[in-house]
Amino acid sequence: MKIVTTRFGLVQADETDLVRIPDGLIGFRSFTQFVMIPDPVVVGLSWLQSVTAPELAFALVAPPLAVSDYKVELRPGDRTGLELDDERSALIYVIVNRGDGGGLTVNLQGPLVINPVARLGRQLVLTSSRYAVRFPLEAQAAPVYAGPSALRATA
Image 1: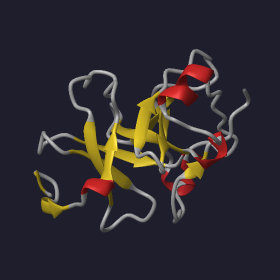
Image 2 (image 1 turned 90 degrees about the vertical axis):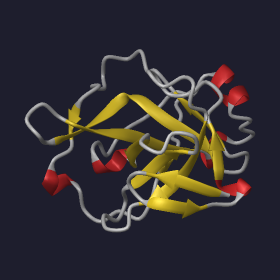
Image 3 (image 1 turned 180 degrees about the horizontal axis):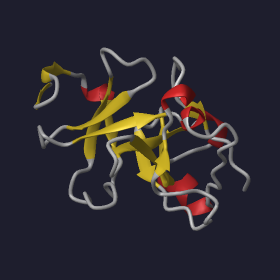
């Protein structure tokens, strides 16, 4: 399949590359099909590109780029919705945003969890006030990082 994007031009992807997010993302509920595109310049940065909206792409990084001890509690309903047999196989990302002062922030309260086998994703809303919605992503805290972190559930 060919996917038109405003950021990367025309992208070729297989049906097996699709990540379905049945509930969509917060504020973007009607967009449910995406592909993951590694950033061609920044190692560790990926883009969640909408299949149907060329201009809609979310920058993603693994949580250790921001917080080394990041933990997510995966509820039974989340495990079921993601079709996860073993939650340790899930991948977790946080969405990168541009902050008010121009710096980068990550949303630690709304992580994206992906089952890489079923190609299903779900954005969680963490109720703990331990994590910020706009946590600064410091330049010195962003070493080259090879990929997403595994889900470390406490439930």
